[in-house]
Length: 507
Image 1 (tube, rainbow, N blue to C red):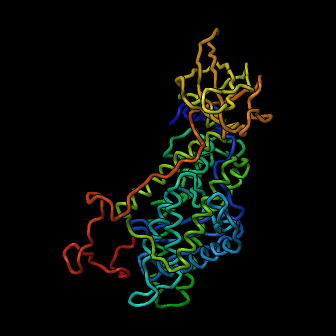
Image 2 (cartoon, rainbow, N blue to C red):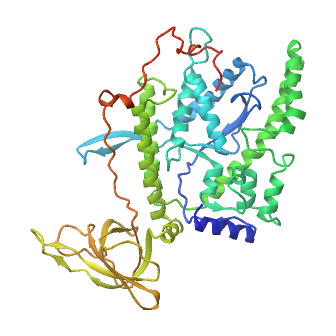
Image 3 (tube, one colour):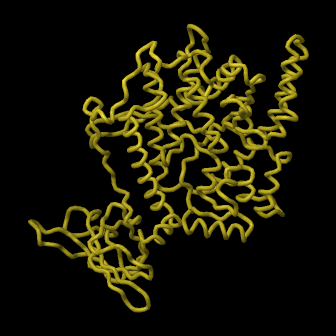
């Protein structure tokens, strides 16, 4: 936890309401996100119990599994979920746009929009990940067939779960993560995973403090858990008798219909409060203006959505159960690069985020007191424009002479530290030499060089393009880092259950 977030949490506890830790919204929010609130049965490995899904507050569709231990009913539930999710995905594939590549010498095409899934908490993302893993290898023919939409749904859920691991992605979001990215509460990080309590701090009801609203939200009789886990008292006292009643009514159609309606009403009662909280959280997030670099990250989600859709259309194989050695290294490298870029972009978009880097010495803010916009460096083969500016700051400057700095106000420009001189009254004078972002001539365009009196932030964080690392081809990888050979069929190390066999665990 950073110093500023710790301070914000202390202020939230003192004020009785969550404190903002961002001035802009650092994620994309779709006009019609698909909200999915799942429930799982306790004691079973990722056994779906129910889900409330829809793209608008008044479009909620309830799906239930009357017998979660029955695998046929689980896959029937998966087919019903696919009937809602897949049309929503296909609705974003109507229009494509041309994107120039190779410096304009060629173009590629991507969809102008992409779908977005929202779940209440990170446990909901894990539910979708396991649900996708358990369905994407199923077959529509042969033994134990499922509906053709089931394996397709599994591949898409796996895609969204993998995108959720990508820093800065907005394809699949947990509402608790989205809210805590922008607000700090007066409770612990573990308590922030409870959506009703979190919203009690962020948007408390009139007459209640955040702590009082959170304590009230933790009463399962007043506000059920946000899923996918359920309250043990609810499981034992209400859910178990309802499931048993449905099973006992097997011989009587009328009684079975009544038992199904009872179970359906019970599960809707559990899911409806979370459904309302999800749209309440969406409204709070819409109240924040999006950051300047959010559309660029959403373009990356659209690229990924387009690529996966084309892979599925071309008959490509499902995602493997686990990455090979080379694929895992490449994936880790991509995630590390994305995390670095996401950290920089958030700081560039938001002064509150940049303030955390100012505390660690990675940035400082100063006022321009002197400027030489016409300075030319003729020490090389040809003269080049190299203006210099002097800033005065009251913050500690921990960067050494010769370091390269960047300013969010002029992200395409570099500033080399020439002098760092302590001044009176605890101030520091910093002389910077500028390069880039001023054209190719020896005269700087208006506005490209900071003027006297301008207050600027300079940081070691760079928003420049980071080239990808070079990895050897699988056949050129040293044997110590290659995948182990596949076991021979019938050997003791071969898998005991074939793909599609219901003897394989659901999760």
